[in-house]
Length: 235
View 1: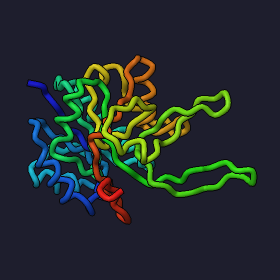
View 2: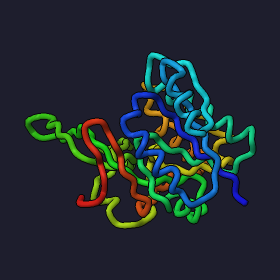
View 3: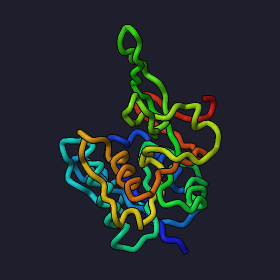
View 4: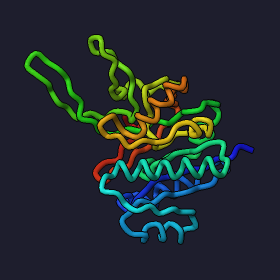
């Protein structure tokens, strides 16, 4: 039997959607273990999750929220490797996954594959009069584009992820992502904000080892933010 650790880095700022998130977690059809890594300022939230029956590791909170996430992801990575899990199923506590999400990702037999969810980006469009900035709903996944002679990345467009397909991309978010232990063995998560986010840097290191990041657009998730819920139904 495949051994899977469902890992989630969280904090008490996601309490607003915890009940809904846990309900979706309980509906997952594949057998798995669950570990939360809590980065809240106090241990109250960790104890609250423990009272609900979950295994929780609490880490001291850093000033930078991304540094908290990186430390949490590396704690999940360590747990996965030390206890000989085959896969880490990384989820984020404001992303609602469907009951068959894990089964679909497993069926792809890939080492780095994730589902798709949406958020709001401030996009920049060059015009003869200068740069126009516009907020747009885009997938949390980047593709490579060529600007002149330079290769760079930008978020995929919404229309690119509406059909169900597998897309080779520059990076995927860690909100619904399956990572094989053979990848985790050689790649850790890095905190280097001047270079990129933890997920984009992880995918970059994987690509250097000929492990592409694959976006499975048949695995569509809901992203719950405090002021807006991003879902695919009705898009």
